[in-house]
Image 1: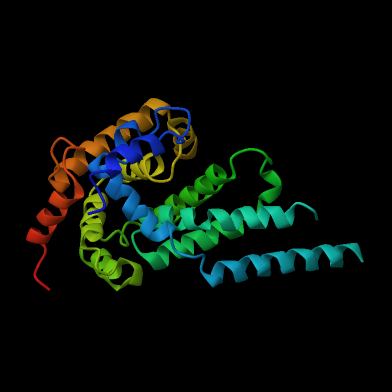
Image 2 (image 1 turned 120 degrees about the horizontal axis):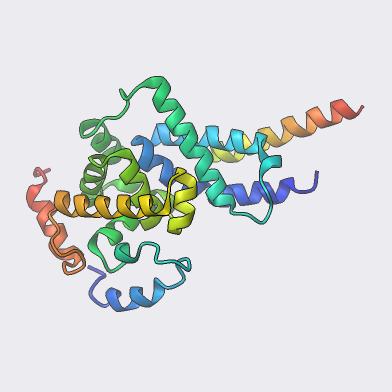
Length: 72
Length: 183
């Protein structure tokens, strides 16, 4: 679909990947690399669910409560 | 005090990656999010052991991976469903609707041994270097490389891709549509 020209573009976009040869044969121009990314980004592209934000808030609160009670 | 707000912010920025990695390990989204939750709690408890300036993402992936294998050892493999449940859950996931090719990919991914699958994800999708992936999986760099290479060959077989890179997604899509049951 959005492809064909993508191959050239993505070859240059692929360079900011770490120094090593990481994923050299899984680059965006490989069929598997492309679908692997699509699969992964399908989840990674979602907004962070509220449950995790509330969890971090709760951990934060619990921690500062225990710190203040220790101190007083 | 002091370092928490940054730590929190950085944790949050890595959550999407953790979820994607967890989903690839665990299969179901519910289980993946439970894993992420455990990881966040553990990371919060151990945040004093994290050395600022080192790779927080790799640190979190390591915690999540350890948690996953600990749970696997406890529960056995009963949760590791290969075809049916995965596919159904993916279909029920709003973001995945209409992504038949992703389901197909997921099924192929599920057929890889755990060690190959995680290596493939870490290198091909999470953006880690071979060295970082080796650290996360506690094995040699060469081991990661060979796992990725074997995983890639197996995926090409399973997906019927020959000479990876020569086929555009269009031809792959049509193959999948040919195989998928008519809705």
